[in-house]
Length: 531
Image 1 (cartoon, one colour):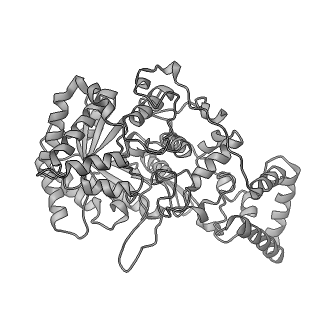
Image 2 (cartoon, rainbow, N blue to C red):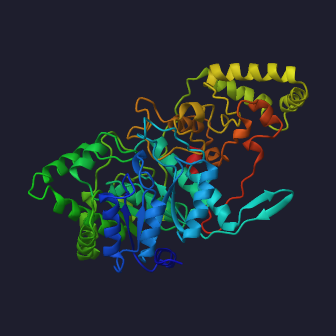
Image 3 (tube, helix red, strand yellow):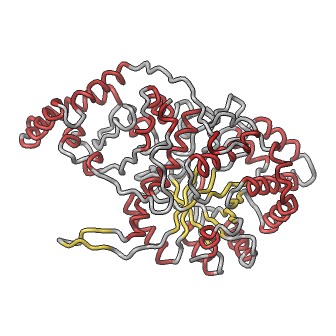
């Protein structure tokens, strides 16, 4: 067991991790900087682990696995980012076994940013599995993956991964905020051992996350808060929405612009701000901090930790400084969550914000919902009839072709169907995640949505999960959004999704055994679903 895992599981230390970003190419300045940073902190008692990104921002880069082995050999504990954007599930399995054989066990499992560049144009994204399904799969590797070898059932050697996940409390619409918490619960049920937050500069959202996990759910899952050392250039990019899921409002941008006019280009000011945020997060009760930023040196990190230590018990004096929420009526999950007085609220006083439901102005939605109740619910006469028709279509090819073409013509017109035929329309309230989400997110939103709920990849579009949430809430069925859909079965591509459903070939026939072995999400805590 490495130092990072031991310290986090014991809850006896305040953890510090630092993020490094390997650059493009197999050697050069970026690689040298990462290795130099590792060599300078390897004996530091204050830094528990280094983390290595995986093609950060959708850019190609040197594999974290290669640099990670070199850093691990220096005696530095390591967290490797395990992103799903560039790998199908076979590559995910291969990479996992490579890391296990190399002695790298701490993984931060992410869905990943949409690719933005590559050789001779934009590469094809994979997103075969999102973070939730990847966590579930990696936990199966920890238990020993069961496979078929000829006619025998074989259990492969178990791994020992310590699995982290990301949560973003820094969402500003109701749908984005609630869906991030629902997805956090899914990640816990899928087997996440610890969490690291997305970066953000609103103390109220930091408080909200802790209240939700520690008191509302009653879970002791370790959480590290991100502390991003924000330069003027990075602040401009985030303010324009060019860094997925990261937001800097106008007030913070102007403050950083003013600071950058000093002879040191604002370096001391941003390091001291980061130190104050470290002190605040420690005071609030986070288990540690994850320090990140471009071109950070080991000396910069030591300066941040030293200044944070000097603040110590006076962290409350700086709590009000971090008030950089959305400029457009930000949503807070709990009543009173928009005030620092919320910090003193006890568990029994926590009440979710209750907001009005929105109407659904979609004839397709209502007609499809009626159809679903008539023929897609087990035990109804319609379902029995359709199962018989599906069995008939399976036997007679001519009948099957008519059946399938009628289905796909209907679904193409109504839902822009892409013929995945492991259809998730029911679970996503008749909004197709394959055609309307560039990442094909079937288990919930990614963390990359913009400040007003728009898509990371297509800013003119609203995130599909914003619309899913309001449809579920309209029907008082938000609890159904907790369902974890297995990854898409490509064996069903361009077949009949109706037949696959009625004959139990698709994901609806697969039952996942969840990993509540460490942190059990209470089943009766979803008060939000009754709004």
